[in-house]
Amino acid sequence: MSIFDLPAPEAVSARMVAALAEATIDDWPYRHWTLSDVFPEEVAVNILLMPIRPPLIDECGGVRDLDDNNNKRSFFTPDLCAGYPVAACLAEGMQAPATARALARSLDVDLEGAYLRMEYIQDTDGAWLEPHRDIHEKLFSMVIYLCTGPNSAEWGTDIYDADRKWVGRSKATFNSAVIFVPGPATWHGFDKRPIIGVRRLMEINYVRPTWRDRDQLTFPDRPVRLEG
Image 1 (tube, one colour):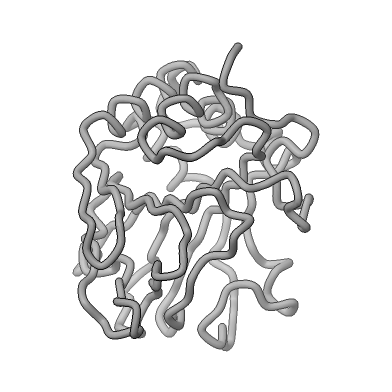
Image 2: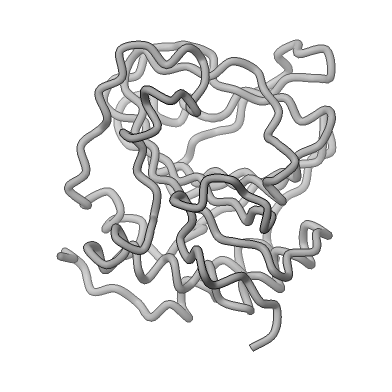
């Protein structure tokens, strides 16, 4: 079900390519890209309208990858995409060779043969993430903020220096994004603070073929191609 007519996946790809071309780059404390208007508006709104309840998690322990909570997470798998047209549209747009080429060129990362992984995250009051670095198997990490409501712009990712000292926070402006390539100094997290409502975001990665949790992949049998 879609409230607003969805664009073709090619429009999703074109919007991502344009957002990358217009991105701002900051090298402190590590290189990261900030993007605006990442998704077509119809896609961003329809993601919010998917009837997926925020998971009930008593204590996250400052991490997402807990055995007790993994079955409550919402990955854009083949089954989920089959049930939600907006998920299928976004999946095809992010899988498109034009999108992969733009990401590879902007981030200077070889993405040929990688796999698309997308997660819809809905944090509620009490959620937090300890300072951490993403694992080597993630070729890049992109968070797209779909936050709405009071103070939601303050629900961005916290950034730390190499000594894990807090140095800043991204703005969680609706339909904006932050991207970085995981490395030895890419410390980030989410300091606990009040969340009035739901902190909604998408995490999108291209991951290496050695990715262990194949059930998290959007197209488990279809690697990313730069040509086509």
